[in-house]
Image 1 (tube, rainbow, N blue to C red):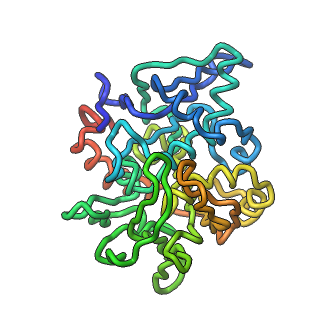
Image 2: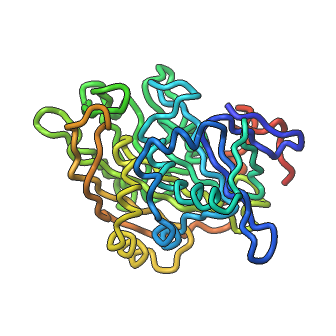
Length: 338
């Protein structure tokens, strides 16, 4: 768990993560800071060689004043060992920023990377089943048996167009899918799904296995909403961007998304000028033939994208519901001023 800084606002992230700092003056770019060892970890992934700037801009994924972070709570990995699929997604998002900062002598490695949620955009990688902060933001908690995640009494996820279904009472043990994970080989996990809440009744969108039970189709959920965690962040216009698949295969498929101009363009056309939105992508062409490299997809397409039109009163309510649980869990040393 991350601790708070002396002013109660800074979060110390001694796991994998990066900070793209604000410019220090007109025409001057800010530092790019990463946790010691994170760059070496991300360099293992080919996604770190991408140049996704245009795609990220069109999707509204910020690259300045932004904390790219992942705090692992995956049941099969300890806190200091992020899931390789989440690593690959972080590599796709931050590789070009790190390279540019290296070339311009703006890159710094630090034992820990602190950031103030009042001053930052936040880019979250992974669903609540693998990233702790995503669980707090979207309103999930571990179920009593620690086999999945259930919704909190108040959950942001239920107010959006789409959310993850991570409840083991809904997705039963027998409904597993198989895939390969780098360093682990073949794994079998419950077939977590996406819930479509756009109609009168909820619709469960399940990833599809092939005849042998291997993952054949996955779904990636991209969400961009205001950074509602503090009033200062909301007032500054900062955002939270979440990138999380039903399974890790879809999470790492953000690499495909950032290399697919037609899909990015279709997303932007669907949401218009909206600052806040959700986009659901279908991830297919999934290969399992290299256990060492892990299961990876070769195709991505837009399923649906919709603006999120919740008003300022709603986001103030969301903050009042979400922040106390984060304070209690130790994300802040003390509560932040309102």
